[in-house]
Length: 100
Length: 387
Image 1 (cartoon, one colour):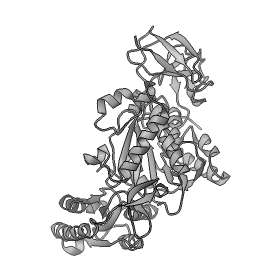
Image 2: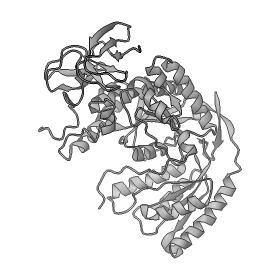
Image 3: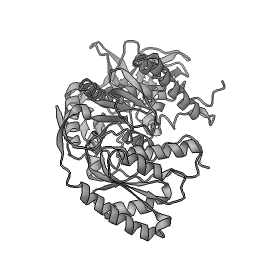
Image 4: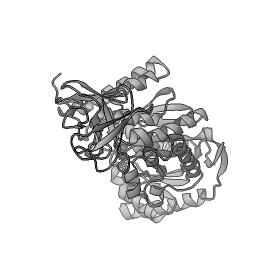
């Protein structure tokens, strides 16, 4: 069986990127960081190749961190292992629709 | 370390030896293209600018076309003018000729129309090709390289594989005394502070923050969320959730070296060495032109989704970070960085492969987009409205 790998880029990150095909709700993936630490987690939601999951519980309005930097804000509570994308992550830049 | 290039009268070194057919305005495109189709060894630039624009944009288009003509990948130049355009075609001829190249111009209205202009231009272009096609390549030091870099059709593999490969090559070129240019100001949004910290002076750092702020202000001017414009639907399908995430992956391709300064869109490299930014949008037709006008002999282009673009006179080396895309589109991809994601190769190993391909390309080997002539969709980035 091929390894279902989720890569966590920086220690500060609260998401990891899955580089494996056919990841469905309930599939087990292995979250790895650059130091070689690994942890198994069950995925919540169907996650396409190259998409992200939370590596810890994230509260609504908490910042989402990848590469050790902010990539957006959580628009709802997100559970560890849950699929993170535009349905629960809002960009905070280029927001012409936001009032000043 | 050396490559085989064409040494120009101004000392610049080209990797290609085209006769450039430059329409001074979009109305001259069909004549320029007809000449190009008839005469081998020519390249043309079918843009959509040059008239009914505000004066700063007309100057920007004139300067951009001058810089294209000055590129060392052009051996000689034919400017195709309509005759009544807003760009300054006489200045084009004068400034390109200052590089020591043979430059000619035709005016469609003065010649009596399209067919007469095509005939006159074809005869001139044929003569220019005969004059320049016998020029031999010579060994030149790699410090003569000006490499432009870009990522397009990005996904989450880009920031972790293909952009890392380009970053490796960029660092290596800077260490060898060459010049590296990166851009896509839109894709600094969210990562601009990391770039500003790498600036050689506070002034350069402030300039980086300013061009990002200007770009973001323009993006916000229509009062909507930028998402779907940037990141694109393809980026989003590839797992990039926000412009911030896209940017943080995109800036990886600039490597780790200090940033020396910011070039304006029409500006060409004269004596600049090391790593430079060019202020450009992310969209391919405009940024590829912005990069070619620097005088870059070659571009290294990272992709995850499979962007196929090229430029008429600047070979584009495609580095693909997504192993699934590489398998699907390997006929269009020059280097497979998907093996990094699969854990089968290191960034350094693929970086060395890409560097070797760069030297071969500069010495004459074609890239995949070049061989299949996929490079006609280009344009010039302007700031004001068409009026």
